[in-house]
Image (cartoon, rainbow, N blue to C red; front, top):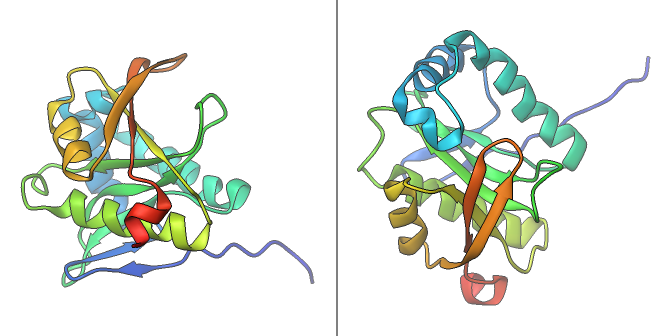
Length: 177
């Protein structure tokens, strides 16, 4: 029998595991989608959308060869958010995207996860540069982008999310030095 094989690598940091989504993650993801916090990704949505959105995440890996990981606590495996390389059809270029679920904010989780994901994109995918797109008013994401060394370089009009700020990450040479 022949078929398609999909490989989603697992990354580990000091406190986190970046891994493929699992059915058990749907509850935490659904709670995030229903909350006002999901406005930064176009929400709120219905919690029942979590499964389809996780399938979208896995499908991105299949079609692009990269994608976002579920951010999980290294000790408990609890889902804390999602991050990684992301490139929908309408985006101006590939980005490093992130979302942190309720209760994971303010602990450096996103910084740790995004730093690992960006390094992986530069080392493994060979990207020279990347962006992150942030919806206006998402002050926490702008603060994280600044902490990651990003600079704002204009705006992008998304057909789905509206106006977004383009935040340019330090390039491959700067990050891997």
